[in-house]
Length: 342
Image (cartoon, rainbow, N blue to C red; front, side):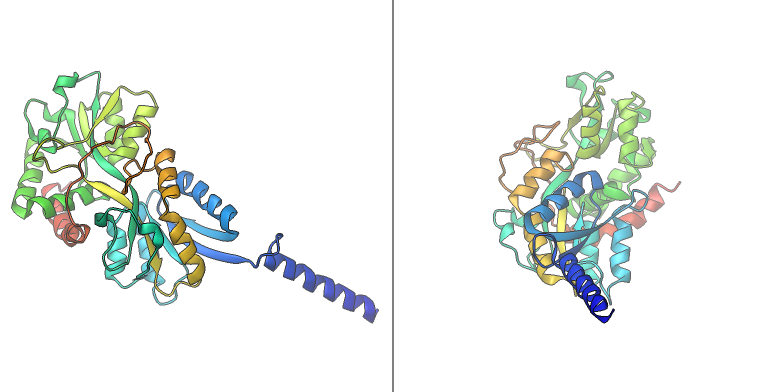
């Protein structure tokens, strides 16, 4: 009986060791990533990482209702005892907030080589990969090409009735990011005048970019501001729409590009695995995949890849420093809440 018990114990120990080391003999390694990128886009990339490295990924995905803010608040609440290693954010402002709150740690990665300087934090707390851009989505049944708007200022132009022009509430989401960028780029007086003009004109203000996209696609709006991912969804669905990158002419301000951002959590429980994942997520391979999957459309480095839906060659981005944009986020939200009070 004692011999049998010893054999059983030895077998259990062997089984546990095998489970810990993985079927291929490698020691079990884990990395925890919080990501606000839609699961349908981020999960295949994380699965590829697992297959290539043998490192198991525990991913926490954001929910649509809370967007990126939910994960950022979770990271803040875990600041003293972090559970996550890496934050893969589908935008940038909450990443900057986490940096400001001391949640992130600086890192270096060879994968940042070739990324345009605008998309790499000079202090090393974050780096970007392919971004979404702000576009004007146009209903092609309602407007002919010569009637298409070319600038955000066309939202103020009386040639288009106010009830046919739309934006999402500028206190939330990427519309809020765009608003803060305009405050940083134009200055407070000009930016406030622009938004006051929209409110006084009575343009349609709706609950989110996807709603704006749906209203244009249905012909209830002639055009509206949205992001490239929403615009591409409507184009791929065969709706009568096209996207215009605004303010592209000589002297134009360009359009806002909102990059994905990758960051290291301070006190990450698995720092070595976190570094491997960061290097992978910032690689050309992943940026190309992100563009091909359709989550983002504008690479942030010279990259030979054709995104779906758009010709992005030569698209001019707004020359705005993201730190300055972040500084304007709360002041602009406060002003815009007064202008667009429900």
